[in-house]
Length: 430
Image 1: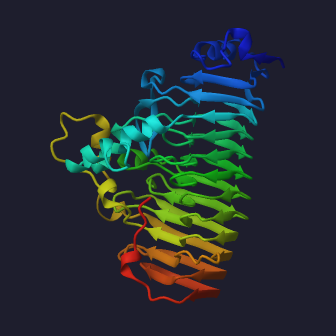
Image 2 (image 1 turned 180 degrees about the vertical axis):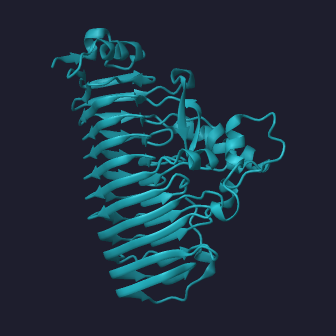
Image 3 (image 1 turned 90 degrees about the vertical axis):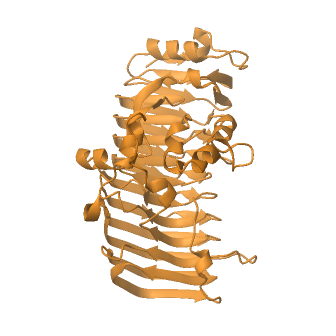
């Protein structure tokens, strides 16, 4: 049970030169139950790959800075927003591992600005997203614009992520994929801006517990996914048995299920969380070509302050992103074909059922920011089934809309909404 400092292998604590090789050498020399220590200092690094049985510990004052050179992140087989494909490795990678921990109160900084500018330019409206959108290719730009994640856990089990800070990720902060028995506790996510800078993404995983985390980012704070399209539907690797408890969610899009639902999402408990100026509290998003299911979901004991959409469900979310063009794909990358080949017909409609939302209080501050109590759009031909709201109190600007629901139960639901619902507010762009 040795503690191995990366300094002993030549890591530079002043970030004057990359420490990737030195840190990886320290990892290679660690034995089961050893701890690789990142001491106080600033260390510049590209992709690192942990191995089974070890702990990576970030001491107080320790900072890992992600390289801003794409060649420092080798291409690996992974999953990106629901599609299995080759993409750059993360800064820290836990792949095909067991019994691995990342601990300590230090910081992982992705230095994401260069990657955000690659996607949307300096003004958030140019870059690759403008180029692709002008060609009718908004549906593929997120996959072609390669950006490193801060942490990837992939095909692994018995993983603990605890107490550190993840910030300024180029893409998602923590991506948990095809893994099981995972604990994320006391982690702080702090992303100032950036496209697709989700906090924690739980992707076709089982037995996951997220507890006492504090998250602020520019997209979903916590998101549960299960793959996109025919390949994911055939794999049938669902996300299930997930608990999200006692977290604080600040800037971001709240707790989201979807839009990648093709493998199915079930048995989720979301409880005792607080939301402060968050875009959304609880959200479901899917499209008409995702398929899969969302069922047995319990959301309870939540406190909301200045949340724009306390309850948001869009089952035909973001069409420009969700639906690809199948024409002339012969010369295009394989992931273009996977994106274009959704699940057709009735099978493409996600089955959403058995949802319980209870003991939720949503309030607005004295500044009275805009809030829409309910924005629910199910499929007319396959409505949301068995949605129960119980002991819910919402202070909102507008009541909003509810459609595409069968078996809706309101029990002790109180809504204060002074203004007439405006169709122009039926939008949320994250």
